[in-house]
Length: 458
Ligand code: TYD
Ligand code: MG
Image 1 (cartoon, helix red, strand yellow):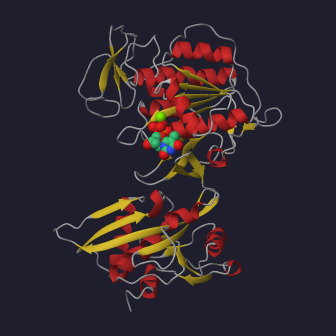
Image 2 (cartoon, protein in one colour):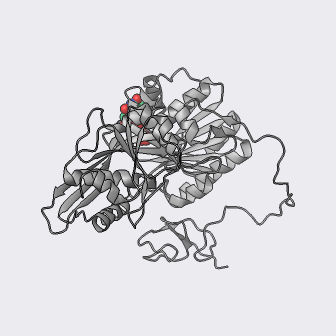
Image 3 (cartoon, rainbow, N blue to C red):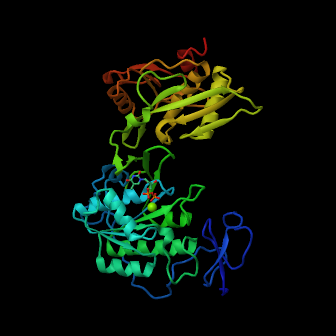
């Protein structure tokens, strides 16, 4: 194995190289190689944990069945948070919470820490971002100052680990992983090498001590947690905290969870006294009550186990340029292009001379295919400048053929619509059900049925 004095680590994928190059051959990114500490390397190999070479104990195998009950979960008492985690925190696990700076990660975790501490758990909150006084000030503002949380401001990983070994907490919160540094690694805090080394040690601490380790990670401008996949691979769960600028709503979403589902969301509102749970989020995303203007359609969606009604708004304005604009907030732009193409091809509705803007109310991001029909309804309504029938919801997946496919959980969607006072639903044909909810179904088997129902075609 070649021994070199310097190594160069790709800041995008973590591959290490013996020589500097403009491009990382592992991931194809340019200008991402940064010189880091000296260690023998195999060209292109991912860095191995320090140590090794020692003879260990023989491996013992166990049965899949295991013994006894699954480990109990430690509920934070913030039910929106617990649900996203799969029903509470699992002992000896590591969670990464990512999000834009300022979205409210520190606020959420301080509230969770206080809630856990009040329930009798022992909590360590280690901040590398702020001074102790700043965290104390925030705790006062959040009415959390009396909770028995052990607070420390420190960035030296060695000191943090020593402190944690002495304290033996049930839950450790580290805010943020990018501020920590390990003295064995010759690189600046926040670089892949440091983030990886610090995360690795903290995850190891979690597994060895049985504590839950929650790491905060900042998201870079292209939407990835810095020291990107390196940390995501190391932890058991990756949770993103999202929110639109200027909107009070914050959404917690699991993107990876070894102990639970990844389609649950937790909804919060950021107010003066911190984050407030929103157990019934539909009202938030409906964009006001009363009659809706043209271009607005209410999508009866399901996020995880919970129905969520959300208003989808579309605008189709005459274009001033040769190439019309398509702008989307809260939905996939490729999916919008597909729906526009289907409306054009299957219903003869042309958007080619129009700029199309699509927005999901309240800052929610929708990923369900069942939103297709609601988007189509908003677009058609915007095009013909005629509102949808008052009190109607829409859902269904649209195929390229124009056919509308059934969406799952119809009963759940209709029940929520009925609860919020909606009387009609544009939905794919149902084999059964629908009537019990009190919502009248208007069956849409093909996208042209929708266009006809909205008066866009004969
Ligand atoms: P913060 O938790 O510091 O964000 P992060 O750790 O993700 O960077 O939250 C910062 C924002 O939240 C800040 O702009 C102010 C706002 N905020 C409130 O509106 N109310 C509050 O009670 C608190 C603590 C913060
Ligand atoms: Mg913070």
